[in-house]
Amino acid sequence: MIELTAYCGLYCGDCLRYKSKAADLARDLQNELRRVKFDKYAEVKGAFVEEFKHYTEYHEVLNAIVKLKCDTHCRAGGDGCLQPCEIKSCIQTKKLKGCWECGEFEGCNKFEFFKLFHGDTAKENLRKIKKYGLDGWVEHRGKFYPWL
Image: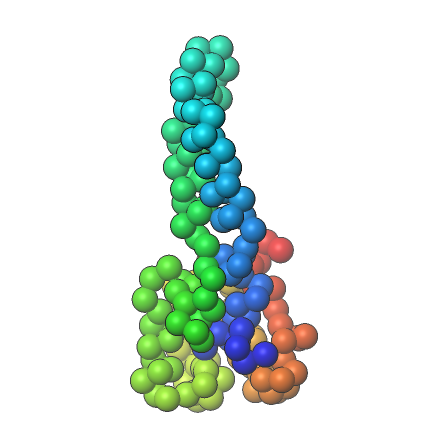
């Protein structure tokens, strides 16, 4: 359990970026579209089908999905946040296993940057880790994303 428990209390196994099929499928689709030169087809077809005029933007979205792929969870050095993680560096500096060992996590403002994606789940999970321990908290975890 600890392996996929991020320092912040989120569970990496629930992250759509961690070992997601979406990134691989987007990459495979990109490869197939390149193979058949679909950009040329969309250029011509755009004269008749309005949506094909947006093929370039569609391809940019596919590129963004491919870049989301994460094969390495937080504890193994991954970059689940797609940016340097203040929480991770704080925990490593304090030489703790995670925020659940820190007496200041309840009022910590380092969680604000991912609140849009995770709401209060990280702090709720930290409380559950304290209550159930690292071996028993996962079955009580909150939703990784509020929309699920």
